[in-house]
Length: 593
Image 1 (tube, rainbow, N blue to C red):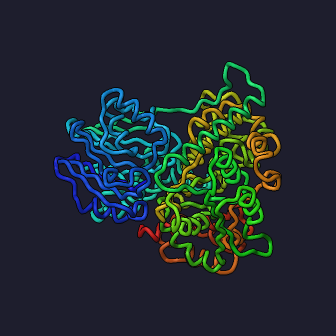
Image 2 (spheres, rainbow, N blue to C red):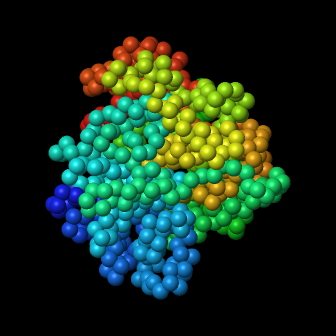
Image 3 (cartoon, rainbow, N blue to C red):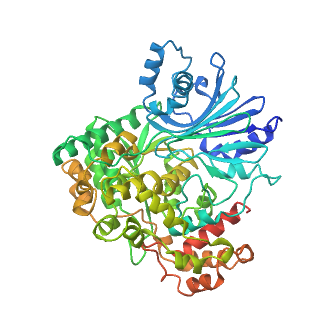
């Protein structure tokens, strides 16, 4: 796990090495163990390393293979690198290191752009061909690892976060104006801005499951190498056969993410079904003394601030090496600006501060953890899926009333005329929900959630908040082979019993019943859930600031309406609309935009 960056000049000049150093400074937290650079004519790479595999200097990056005339920077983990190494050795390749980085170089030499089809894991990759003078970029199927880029007209820059790119913009080569299409998605889909868009016109991100080849003449070749098929298999399976198959695939996913590491691996244990099941599966495959970590906050009158009663039960059942971390409310608000500062893009999820503070403590002990993100989207765990299933109308008409934070009419009320056009989000979701190779409407919804919506909400949030402290989060529920299997499973095995039925069946007898049968919970951060006191004052200051007024994104009448009754205006999934507006403006201010 690392932070990577680079610059490829397309105007005949040499890259500015100061840009590389500037970007690396913004990536230091992602990789505190080593810094490295490489340049070759019009190309320069930079990398900050978090040492997890091959801890020796032979695993450092940028990695150059003189025999193959290839150089690489890479962020992520390839879980099947031992098998690929053996296959490539049989083809005549020799290796000087023991990690996964060199395997990627050899795989690219052997299979070219198709190498990504051989990888099991999470990755953002950049490969420079010293002979052909081409830059190859790739992102994993599920979009777990980020890859941002900017085309300045004179050249192409990329990095693991937007802050690194913005730091090189002293000459204003990168367009930092607001993208109205991205803005529409941001406020409709609780901060999801689908790739290749970002909120800034001049910064894009490589789509998940895509490669991008850039040639010396500036020609770009974008290719999608994987799509998710959500149709039933030809051979019918019983419910038990499906459950057994998912169980085995989950054990494989968990085993991969525990075994492929030269440092210890822990678990972020929230006390919910998903993370508790990860602990149970690790125990089932024979892993003992598992390091587990839970976080809790101060209670509010309406809600408890921790779920320790559930995580304690799991820790006791499996005799884990358990750590409970309590965060006072005043610490939550005090540290909130730091969490926002580490967001590559604006993120509305109020659990970001929770993951940020939890990761800070975990990183004192570990470099790698497993986390439960993806289970709800892959296995139908949210309450709105059943409501959508029962609704009538077009796919968009069935989806919109239970998911969109604002309909287009409210978007017109929210944004000033310069930032509002047509209903961009409806167009995106219509295309996504009506795409072929999904047997039912719910199949198409879960596929959309898994391949797009989750990428730019919980997955991105967890990556940003953990890597802010040099902690790698591995997400077994997003193992692409597991996701492929689950996408073909009949929807009733997901939606039954309030959702995640198959996971509950696997969990029964493995983890405590109290965890399985509890009401679904969310990462509790009460201080930010209830819009009052210091939190409300924080948002009032932001939205009434001169910067916000002069920026002119929001209709003042809409802002005033929300400020007059701050706890009244909630989205359909109970998010604060006031927080949405405040978070975007504060993120822009922090990034000096």
